[in-house]
Figure 1 (tube, helix red, strand yellow):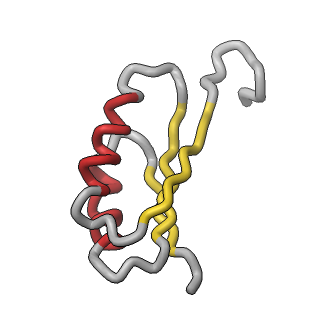
Figure 2: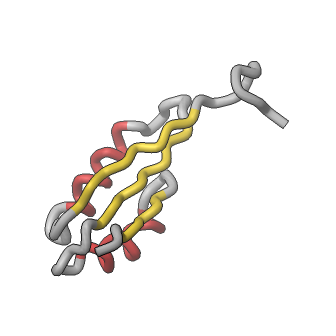
Length: 79
């Protein structure tokens, strides 16, 4: 198995993003961010923390996961 610092191992990073009532813009933003890493030799995971949005942010994030080239983890913050 590949370990930290081994030749051939891709660096990994998780990008954590807060979201509150971002249903209208989160898909476009994550799509653009996803494209920024196109061709990069780095493993990227997006972690979006939905801060109890009252709009459809959670639903947008659920639908978006399959359309991105990188993993998306959506978490709802506790109230």
